[in-house]
Image 1: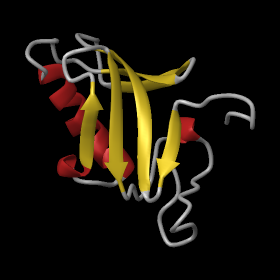
Image 2: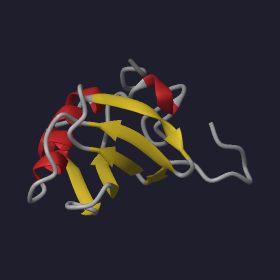
Image 3: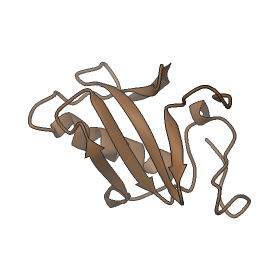
Amino acid sequence: MAGAHEESFFRWDGDTLVVNILGKPGAGKDAVGKPKGTQLKVSVTAQPRHGRATDHMVAFLAPLFGVRERDIEVVFGRESVHKQLRIRKPRQWPEIFGPWDMPSQVGKVKGGQ
């Protein structure tokens, strides 16, 4: 997890998780990778055509965060590898985020996977 003086690939905005993504379309498998600077690497098998890889990424990530696809907003980067997602009220998250820590609901939701 990032220290007080380091920037992280995610932050909280109330009960919404804001995640900066470095996407890799056309990958061999869908996977959440490691952070690269202030972005989290996420690979998807979909090809980068007209935002389809981003749509596929949202569909892949939704169950990992325990939300519906419509609870994930693509703020920017729909047709770019550099993206920002806003995930409303996630109920869990991948282990790469560290221990589960949702500010407004700690202890009321399921921990990381």
